[in-house]
Length: 145
Length: 145
DNA sequence: ATAAAACCTCTAGTGACTAGAGCTTCAAGT
DNA sequence: ACTTGAAGCTCTAGTCACTAGAGGTTTTAT
Image (cartoon, rainbow over all chains, first blue to last red; front, side):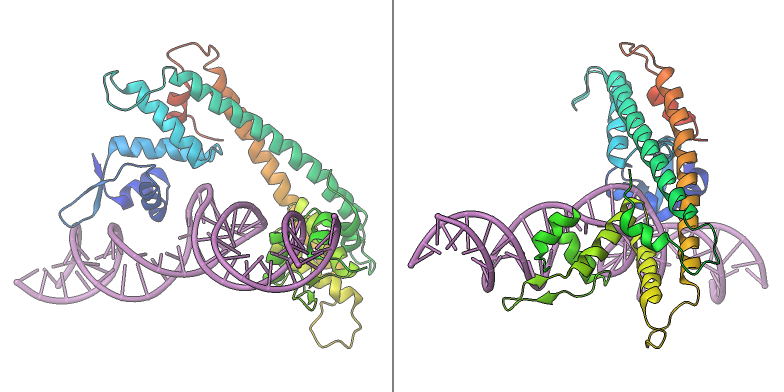
């Protein structure tokens, strides 16, 4: 199966300029071109883009994804391949995922305390018809926790 | 009290280039200059920067903050001032805050489901010494919820 | 008087895209 | 075979909220 960039875009729900951008920064390999210079993708490349999109949806950065892809390549490469491969790719992948989990949990904590503060601000001004709403004042004094 | 940019920076915990950036985009008024062209700030401007920083800490975008500042100015301006002022600034401020609260809550929801997915991925590969870790495979197939 | 710290402007870079201009190629219908 | 419109191409620039660095000037302390 061969995909044009538009078909790939539909298949992966990834916008066309984004696909080109991924190629530009080396996250996707350079696509083969047709006689008329249009990009052609294999199902393997489609698979890879799926991987990238799922990882993005989970909040991994493009840099983390680059690492994960490298680890993936290690996994499947024959040992005699030229490029350097980690001896324990699965372990590293595990580590990246766990570090990311820590980030996510921290972010949740922050947002919850933020929610509390916002609620406090909004509630000091319950009466939306009041001409002496406290919100603007609050933002001068209340500190985020 | 008159502040140099460095003093203002210390007072508000806002980095110097950021202060200049806020001036550039019109979030802070242009500062008065000394004979030697260095910026000088009043405590009013310091107050405003505090407001901005607190709002940022609460996750308001600079655009939202611009709106809030405008509303604040309306509140204190005499009615005969030239520029257009909202008739019910407090109400609008309330609305901006509430919309932001909704955003925050959505973000929390997203992150929680993300946390679940990450955990699932990590747990399918409990044994970090395994040479057949499932993480990389998972990222190909598991979808974020 | 001199040296160091603080300030100035200007340019460019970050991450992860997105939008638009202006051109070429492809596929379908007549 | 011809035309037309969709889809593709490259390149530049914009988004948000800063941050970093170069290279120069001013202020402050000794």
